[in-house]
Length: 94
Image (tube, rainbow, N blue to C red; front, top):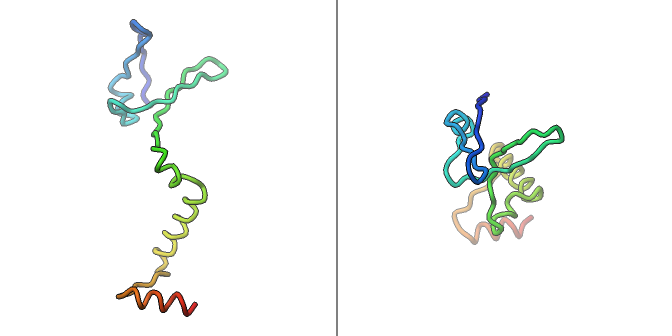
């Protein structure tokens, strides 16, 4: 765990030391969530901002479907078709 001392500079800015940046793989432009705990600790947590148009992917419902699809692929419960006609025929027969 990286432990460092920081100084607050003009405009209340701080610089993350190299060891801390490496530990969290921080890059210029990354976003950090800042929290103050009840006992007065400041917590910085790297976060990813998700584009609104992609937010559906991270919903519980979508992730459940993704997990189910991954399991079907892993266990070989998939079918391949050489034409749309064969696919439609298989769907109609179910």
